[in-house]
Structures are given as structure tokens and as C-alpha cells.
View 1 (cartoon, rainbow over the protein chains, first blue to last red):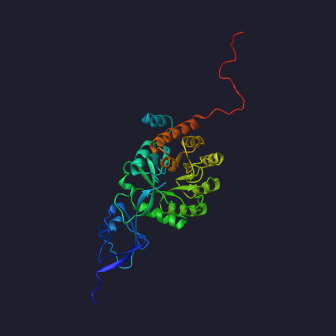
View 2 (view 1 turned 135 degrees about the horizontal axis):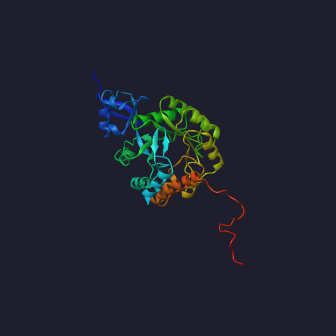
View 3 (view 1 turned 180 degrees about the vertical axis):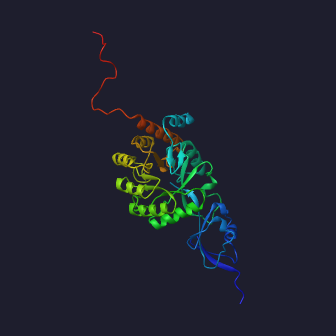
Length: 72
Length: 268
């Protein structure tokens, strides 16, 4: 049987379908996010920015994408 | 006049040094709750603050353009102090602090662990626990706490680079409700004491600084004023005024009148 061309991941609390084989860098690009502007937590592990191009996104992963907003 | 205020303060007062970072302004400001980002930036510039707080939140994936604070505030112009606002457990606060550090600007964090939704008063036990974990992990922790001396001493022992007792509850604008405890904390700690939360207007900021503390952190007093930019100017002057009055040492208060002009030399 042929492997499905998409995977399902949980991103910021919502399920999303994305293409298989993306790195974190590629994943952020699909979401139109600049890698320098977000911090990525993959399955509760914070990723170093310089690993975004190496780490892949897999089926069932949970991602949190955070950034700085106004606060006191 | 604006520059003159900062200049006068620099000549008559030393800098505020927190965890090795030297600040000319004793006012630290938040970036939340402004009507627009333009007003926020204008108000912060008017306040003269060099250190500004920011919060860590999920990116809103439905409208990501321009909403991050970094689109408006340059990390080259301001020292970004990430907070753990909204966290109710030590574990959550540690998680948010680590996410903030991964943004790559500095290893400072404004630690805040809330214990009660109505008063937003801190959970001091959880704050202490998180402070210990974070300092061991190399963070420079500036800890928001209540006006309790024992907790303040323990936070200092835990390695916090600043202890930040509240003047009154977050966003209340009630001013310093317990100046005696604030003074006591300042007297007993070696690390900088920054009063965080509760200042409502310029006189509150001035009175707070007159207690001898090292600085004030505020957000709502500026953001919720009818004119945030004017209020920011007022706060900048009030902070300097209160600081210089403290350093000058006030005259003793007396409940009797004492004439200012000589009683001798009056005509018959």
C-alpha cells in the first residue's frame, strides 16, 4: 500500500494536515512564519533555532509555536 | 526638558544595575493593553525606560502578520524582559521561561506565578520553587512577589537578581498600600528591589521611590491612562523626583508650625 502523502500534527492546540517529509524550517515556511520570530516546542522539547533545518516533522507530533506579545 | 530629567538623575544618582545590566532609568515598563502599537511605542519612548516586559504566547496561526511585539519594538533599542504571566504552577512558569530564553535575546526572566484569579496575588511557594529551578538553570530571575519580607529574603537566597514586591494588586492602580513593608524589604535585601504592580498615577510612583526602592515596574498605569504618552512623561519625572527626594533625605515631619523666617529683628 502506498504511504499517504500527508501527515496529521497538533499545532497550537489544533489538528493540521501537512505534507510528509517537512523539516521544521519547511513547516514554518508553509505557515508563513519567519523562523527568527518564533520559538518551537516539539513534543514538549524546545528546539534550538539552528536545528530547524535538520529536525523533521512526523505524523502525530505535537508542536507549540510561540512568540513575544505585549505584556506586563 | 526630557533629556534634562535623565541627565540630572545621572549626575545626582547612580545607575540601576540588575544582574550585571546597567540601566539609566529606574522605570521598567510593560507592553500590554495599549490601544494601538503606535501608542505603545510612543509611550514607552516617552517613559525613558530601557527595560520592557513582554509575554510569551502561542502564535495566532489564523492571522500571523505583524502581531508579534518584535514587529514594533526593536531588541536593539530595548532590553526585552520576558515574563511568565498567566502561569499558575512552578512547572508552567519554568516552561514559559525556557521558551522565552530560546528566543535568544537574554537569560533574564520576570518570574510570576499567580495563586488566585481574583486578586492575581502571587503563589509564593510556587514562585520560590520555580526561582530555585530557574537560577540553577542559569537564568537571571527577577521575581514578582507579595510585600512579605520572609519570602523576599528567601527569593534572594534562591539567587534571584532582583526581588519585585507588589505595591498593590496587578492592574489595581491603588498605589503602595504598605509602605512600611516595602521599606523593610528594601532595608534587608542586597539585590535590587523593584516595586512591581499597583502604581496608578505619578504621585504613587513618586511615593514608591521615596521608600528607597531601586525602581518601579508598571504597565496599566500607562496603558490605561486617557493619554498614555503624557502619563509616561509624568511617570518618568515622578520616578526621578521620588528617587532624588529619597537620596536627599527628607526633613522630619512635625505636627507643629516652625517659622521659616527669623523671629529676631522684628520692628517694635
